Image (cartoon, rainbow, N blue to C red; front, side, top):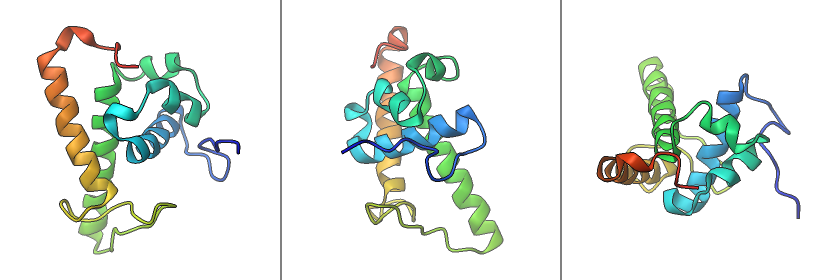
Length: 127
């Protein structure tokens, strides 16, 4: 069965957006440790060079995914909309701690930041 790439149904506006959308999917499916930059690139329809040209390393990519999710939730909360949306796995966003992808991303982002703090010279070597 062929793996779908981001953009087959609805293409985000920019390369960066496509990479972030693909990264969110791959991180949600495999977790931070199980996600390879090459898999994210393949899902987005780009090379790893396109990713490393925009993000320092996999940890920074995860942090940007989390930042985007949190900003979307904040905007929705300010506007008074319910931010719960369902993905193919049945969960995408909600409040931290409720077992959603957002909660998973918080955990992975914290682990990524700890890994970055412990090994700052390993940038880009996590694929």
